[in-house]
Amino acid sequence: MQNVQEKGLMAVCAEMEQMKERFAKLLLGEDMSGGGKGVSSALALSNAITNLAASAFGEQHKLAPMAEDRKKRWRREVGWLLSVTDYIVEFVPSQQTSKDGSNMEVMMTKQRGDLRMNIPALKKLDAMLIGCLDNFRNQNQFWYVSKDADESEKGVQRSDKWWLPTVKVPPEGLSDESRKWMQYQKDCVNQVLKASMAINAEILAEMDIPENYIDTLPKNGRETLGDSIYKSITVEFFDPGQFLSTMDLSSELSVLDLKNKIEASIVIWKRKMNQKDSKSSWSTSISIEKRELFEERAETILLLLKQRFPGLPQSSLEISKIEYNKDVGHAILESYSRVLESLASTVMNRIEDVLYADNVAQDPSLLASRKPLEESNGQIGQNQGQTPTGSPTSLTLSDFMGWSIDQEGASTTNSNSTPKSEDTEPEKYQSKSAKILARTKNSYMEKLEAYKLRSPTTRH
Image (cartoon, rainbow, N blue to C red):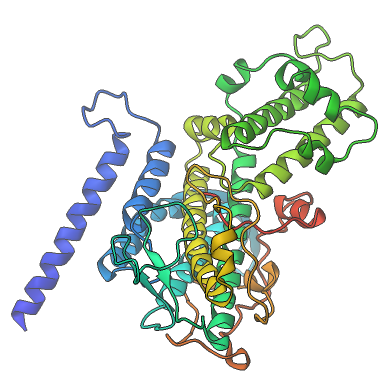
């Protein structure tokens, strides 16, 4: 008994030392020399969450539960980093009753509103993704084969990522129950992906545009976009789909270049609309109404690009915002939502690998006629393979995210390791108080729904 207590005490001491070391490095701003040349606290925390996620999820190449040591390390260390948000507060009025029974209004501290709403939501998304991987424990409907296996043993590779193991399914494909269960898992992960994307996009939109970025911009949109793109956006009758069909979107670099130009033009036009001094270099001879119209068209194009090519790297504006951001709360929300988005994208791709192998087993001609599918990490994913028919009804985003904000802890899907039939599918996550996607009238996800855009399958 004493030995057990001693081991427990030693483990706690080791954990405390590790936590002290981690926060000491953060306070130094990643400058271990102590010379004051480190990065800001916000960027240091952002980098810490990104690096932690890379070490925890970087080897998640299969649909299988995370190793217990990596899972515990992730939960422990991300909890340390998120604990900073407990001390980011705002003053709110509150009623206090004095001893004589009279009421008075006093100011009390409360966690900042955006953190109070988003941190529990992101923790829930985190738990659901890890729970989804846990659901694949002991499954026997598919398995993975290494790339150097015998030719007869090799599985199906959906992409040209040679380092990923290939998927093998039974000769007749998955059973109907397994196929429906796999599709349900994909729907759940897809909703997590959309939610994390929405939170990340909103946080990036709230970050201030650095002056360093503005200083690099031309003084008018035509110079930024070029004559051809500028004329296409400023025509009398504008069709965003037709516009994109005339653009060169054949490579990641060309799409990213277009995204950078569109974002820069939006910044320029907004700055011109808000510029009061007619003698300023940012003044404009075009009416405010037309400038607003051009800016709305550019916003529409940007939304279409983000949804159609979710595998794009971060744009120049996004990189600049993250680098020069000083708001610690925004830094934590942005990096946490980004790494969850990346993990959801990875899990989504692995599920689609299995569904593709199942489709090939049912129709071998797909393997011979298929075009190389483009994934994330340097490739652009547009229209992924069609999903099998007969799947359970997809969850809506409001259904999936409708939990109570006050509810703490990480609850996961209560699902067995074996596939479930349609009448016993895992319980949908429902409640009534989540308003994650309704904080602003023209939110990111509202605009996506307005354009009836297809949900993304990969971004990172």
